[in-house]
Length: 381
Image 1 (spheres, rainbow, N blue to C red):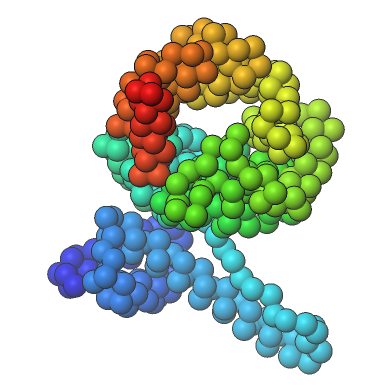
Image 2: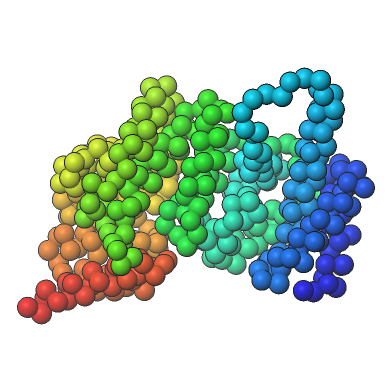
């Protein structure tokens, strides 16, 4: 443990808390609590941003202390009242922290990146991958966001759209990445849906439930990926699917379409198909058209090319793919799949090898390598 570093950071962290409007004595207590926590945690898990870590922990300790003090005063004021029956409510400030980090002084993209790093638990590399930018670029963006809010009071929460974007990216990382955050993202989105009557909040919750319902079938016993078309649909969570569809239908009925509702509609069409062959790809293409109109996201156009290939044939899919930026992650994997469907195994095998080299994680790399090996084995027969 670098005690010199801790001593050097203490005045700066204390100053940040005081500038946020905290009484000096309370700020000093919070910083001391954060230092004790640092002594306990840092030897095994040193933070990449010590000052940011201390500030965040000290801020949380202050909130805990202020809440405890308010609760104590209320108990003293209501000492003669009969306590309410049942278990004591649990306190969870996570969602509040999401809103506080999405500060109005930040651009939406910077607020999302900062919240993912400070509260969501994602690494800079994971955030950079989600945004399709180099890790160094994302590190600079997060550092600028920290500097922007370091002297501000976090008393002006950000908007719902920014928080939804954070929850969506946390869920995606938990669903497909190294850290299991999907269940936590669903829990927080449920909280948000209970507090805010907003069709896009409902759309995001429906999307998460529909995707999460397929999770058990996404991997084989050996840990390898199982493509959607090959998944054992009896392993899908039908209760989560039913809940997701019900939530989505209620949101769509309000006629305020947003990107999360459109994504959820695509997921619902997949979930509704008894078999892969019975998937309504024509409707899925139409929903991707809506999603592209709403977002202009190039990844949407990439996924749309796959859907076009299923609805209208692989040649049509390849034509749609030609209009997409070939630098996008998974572009090569999509091209390999469509070339295989189009009866060109040699090109497909070569592209699967290239896609495996570009894969963002080990499971995906192994899956693409096996696809290339399978086609090469067929060609040798």
